[in-house]
Image (cartoon, rainbow, N blue to C red; front, side, top):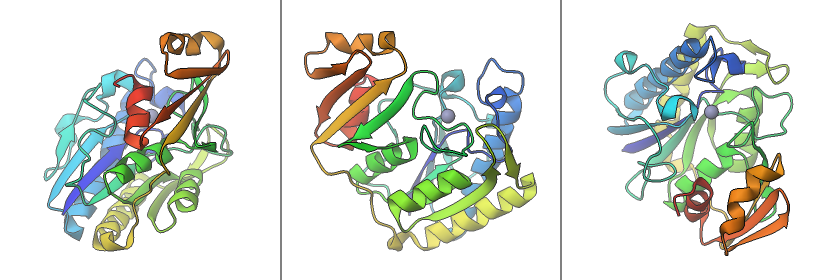
Length: 267
Ligand SMILES: [Zn+2]
């Protein structure tokens, strides 16, 4: 049983502010520790549930995609550290049985939701697939879905868990905090949060056969709306991209994987 674990940081236990998620901020080390603790709990649970091969992707954008505290990581998994990788969700492919989304956050515009954003809190207003607004949770699930891999577990705040259930239907969630605004939440104590994640990770692996891959109907029309016009400027050089307005671009992709490869600049 091969598991791919996509991770972010905003949804980690106890994280409520950008002071903990940006590498140049004073409390970033606490964010790293929180993320590492959540990942370790998920790895322990997944192994207890029967996962024999686990690849964990360090997906949060800060610090060159190297956010975990390596020396504190749980044994029994492999860790993909540093970015950019070869592709979006690097390490998830047709040989993978199940995916987890650990420490994820709600899509841009969600409320109340801890550090809601989509791809970049500084640059992106929203990202649509065939007219539907999709957050990072949705895009990651769609890329996994492209490889036939369903998402079995999502961890984060209440808004993230609700978004996961609405989008994916049957999925296990571990809610480690309840958002009261974009930067405040009622949080489970660290030990309680990790016990919950471990228990839910085990359950998700044991129920792996019950989940369905999330697939977006192809071809996919991707629309990216930026906050300001200069953020969209780089796209103007591309012939296969349509400028909807000065800060909104649209392009077509054959599938979710290609959609994110183009977005990330790899295609
Ligand atoms: Zn992040």
